[in-house]
Length: 268
Image 1 (tube, rainbow, N blue to C red):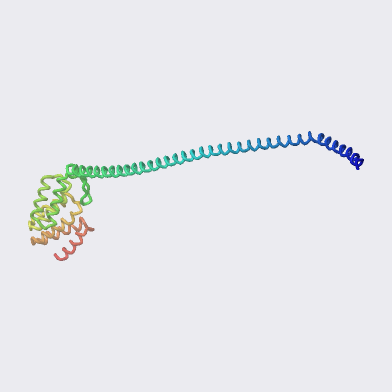
Image 2 (cartoon, helix red, strand yellow; image 1 turned 135 degrees about the vertical axis):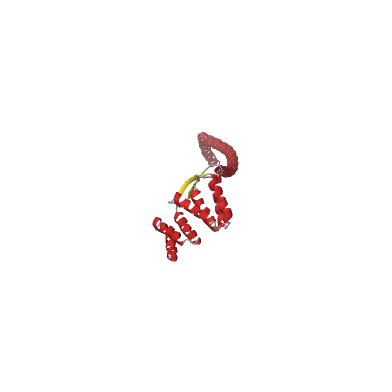
């Protein structure tokens, strides 16, 4: 048994030597692997640290950018608010200015109206003193304001049937304005008023003066007919017939001539 133990001992010794040799051989390789793992681990840790720092820095930049963006948005909102306030103020100013312009336009229109009224009043007053153009019986002439007023008042008196006042008014008009354009009409209406007063001779003189002095006057045929009627009133039918014949010869197409024919037939 000792021999066996002795025999086994060298073998164990050899195996131990081999194991030791293997360990010695493998020891550097294992150490190298451990070193490499540590370096990789450190590299990973460094990389992770850098990444984390990068993330932190990125977040910080984003936060800063967000803060700047928020500040810019706030500034923009305030600017927009200020602009909106300015626009509202401009609208208010424009509305106020428009109101002032409209008020000014109304005031100008009112001033123009008043000026027009004043001018019209001035013109009316001027017309009271300036000669005016008048058209009567197809004739146009210039008459003084007072001359026109007297004629119109005399006609108004005649329309009221006041023959005495009418005769006085037309006589006064002819005396004051002997060259008046109203004279021919005044002669006829004077004769008409005298006829109404049964002042036959005076009426005949007025009518005859008109026919002799203004044979082209539209009232001349009526004046002749009136003379014939007066002559009938005076019981002078012979002279009345001659007057009507004059009327028919001088103014055959007039209405007075037709009435004269009827009167002439009655005289026969």
